Length: 502
Ligand code: ADP
Ligand code: MG
Image: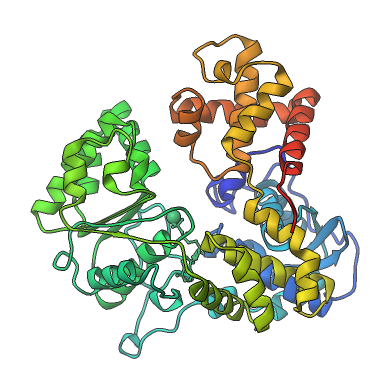
């Protein structure tokens, strides 16, 4: 396991711009001169870059990753050619973790990643690596032909629209037809069709995909629409920040001066009384002025823990629509679509085999396709049932392998000889606090939970306590060999815990 917890988004960590190089900046030097990239490396790097673009901004990609190539690859190490020492140091300092994680996502295993100055190889990569944007960008409809800038959310939004999240890339089946139509309805006629629109369904079923498609569609037709798109976590953080700085008026005008407010994962308002109250006023202010609200959640309004009744009732004013897990046929269609998007056709028997086995979550179906194609490129094998079987182990650790927070608590409690209840207690002695923070760190690394959710499992702690614990352990793994050993061993143990392999 990597020691730092900066992997969540390499992008936001970049402190400053090109004018402030890392301290170790050196003059460009050829470290070695190697052969040009091999063709299957070119394909591999192209795929990695497409995946990277999900975590970093396009400008960052253009600046740092376009002029790069895979220089060599073996079982343990991926070596990436870069143009000069400056790029090497910068990438090393700010993007290493993101690249390592992307490699793991695409290839299904963690490799050591190094950046090596090799301008010839890097330049060859630049020529041969197609810009991922060109490939993943959905075609513009004819009426938008003279379009200038691509449609954009208000800059204070906390995402940019992902080009993969478009209506035409969404596979429609009985499980999601209604939600899909509702989102299209709002995109066509905001503030008229349904207000608010509330989309719920469990993780990985396409909520974010639909919300972003809605925004994109609307902006394509009426680019001047002021859409603020936020995760609930950001709303909460901004609100707390505004309270602390006494800038609540500015906060309010920012949230209320929009045509459409989209809040993804609104269930995270659970247990946050003051933020709920603020959101209630934001909601009213927008709704009475006929502004559109779009919300997503992992459960229906009534099931959001401690959500105030007046918010529950408001969330139900418009349309509440649910995404169900996909049926077999939809899973097949998604598998085909996803592999085609990545430039490959998968044979029918392979698609059926996967659709049979991965039956819960679309993100995992997608992950399986990505890994399978990555595996075939890497090992230069054809996509056959045989090759699927070979990489099955890895595929299915994705499927069932994510240890739950309960697994983490149990393993941590056993390891340190404390009770699980003590991890959740208020006690702050080092003998309890340290294992608790290790548990939080592992939960953050291994599960997809937010800081709040993790805090909830560790005795109702708030997100800043969890963040503090996670950061502390991340720091200790760099300074203290014992902590590094604890974290490494526990995470190996958790992953070994993996269920039956097929
Ligand atoms: P959620 O927000 O519900 O957790 P996402 O919208 O992030 O889920 O979807 C997870 C992944 O699955 C995304 O990459 C998304 O593009 C893909 N996905 C989900 N539903 C569909 C669908 N019906 N068709 C195609 N891709 C889908
Ligand atoms: Mg989502």
